[in-house]
Length: 149
Image (cartoon, rainbow, N blue to C red; front, top):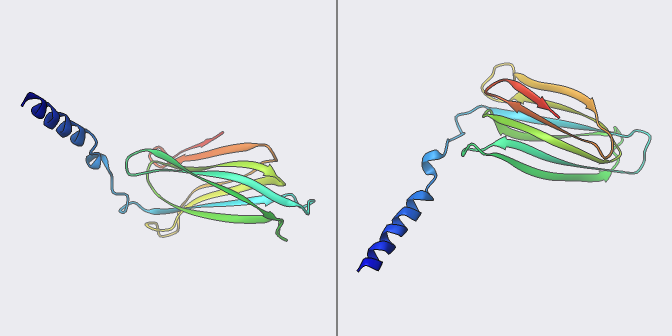
């Protein structure tokens, strides 16, 4: 009988300790923001380009999560490409860019697509970034601080 009670007690504790629904924050009421990343390619090259990114966002469990992506291909005629990612106006968002081949710079813009009448822009930067270099840009909605590394 004692083993049965111990089993029930351990099962109850295990099931209750694994339930994190109470810690979840519904992000649907938060405004939508667009991360707009434009990557500039070497205009003196006719070869292929290649770079990696990691998009950052805070999820409903208050965890900063990353979503990696890799891009490569033939050089476009305008020597640039723009990529978009929608995030919520919640805690921290950003991107890490890792230049691999034929990259010379980037422009990053984070702006509202809902909840603001004029599409408020919170980040608008442009910098050089060459092959084998990387940079991380994170914006904190709570403190309005921008981190660039």
